[in-house]
Length: 292
Length: 282
Image (cartoon, rainbow over the protein chains, first blue to last red):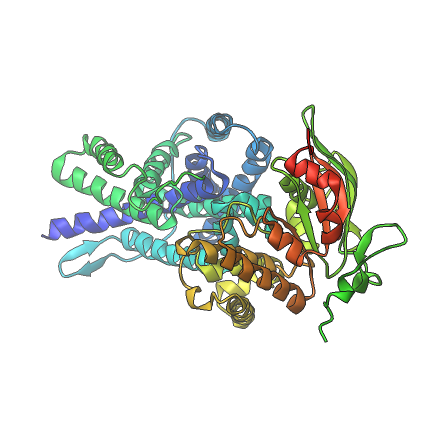
């Protein structure tokens, strides 16, 4: 029973990291209608930013987090401006291939600067382990869970209650109509990229704390898993990304604990295949209705 | 005495020769389009389109299918950039402006096929329409501070007021997509009005309505003008509606204006009759 609970909690924690990243995929897809495959590499950049901030610039942990968020936000907005904005009217395939190109570009830049050797990430948060009813929860595990819960709550409020959030929902439903209401679609897309990248930066801190070693290709696996999570929950849906991410993390941890570490990824993607067969739009995805 | 009575609707010319209702003669026209034209590839969709709409005029834009009426609306809102000609909204040129900037200049529209944000609530649709007028500080929003609450409350209040005006207040919380057809049409008008336009463009507002709904719509259009003192330009195929409420009418065929004038002039104009019904005895 204790083993079960511990697995569940570490699954929730891992899942909340996936959820943070998945939010970036799903928001960008919902608003710009593109799959930003370079999103995973933003995590890698965030992790390196934290390494540089802590080990080379000797900044305190919290400042390093802010530095990583800043670097990633600026990077996300810059990539959007330089690579994706000129392709706004292009076919989706062009944008998709550009995103893959951006992904390789970022990986190779990191390779040039930091080399192919893995680097240890700093410990940003030293939180005491919690013991509840015999279940021991690591500081980083509950810290991740707590922070992501707050972020998701804040994001939900932002999307539903603020003027900018409403503008984002309007743009995701009908760009043309939103533009005619006085909403700048370009500005909305920029803000979406900024938010998505900032969330990826926070995810990178937790990811680094949990997995310790960072290399230029580090972003690929959490990136693809978070993308899976976004599809799992219904791409374009914000609660869907949260649910999909958390479920994915829980399934992965249970597969590792009870079935096989080697097979855990296969099981995760197998569940995705089954879900998409039963519900092609994902768990919380909206039914796509044809415009007539 | 209604300031918008029959007598004040009589069309009189500006010095430029453009016709507007008599009461609007001393106000700046809300819209002046001069020699507008647009080509798609080699095809000229609209050419030499000139129209003047008075400050409180209800204007009609009619013509057979494919005449370019909706294209004109897209030109007026800069969804399409005109190839030729210029547009003045309240005396300001819209050249080089993007669609969202033009919306801030006081123009709003509805669509031929309803384009509500159907997953958002009725109230949120109206609030999106108010986008230009909600002054909301993001930092205040983050902390749910005083300024945020006030701006949000004021927005909600005036949105509810508008919804009430069109008997939609009871449905404020419902998703827009769940509304019956007629209510969705009304909501689109409310959303457009929420941006506080000086000129409201209605693209086939009576499409799909039965005669009693059309009659109610006519009353509503008049009520909008009488209450908000704005100009309305509408595209419509329902001639009872057009002839019943429009003061100035512009007839388009093959992308060109073939006639302009009061409903009486248009009804008896042989060129218009020919465009709609074909040549007599031919």
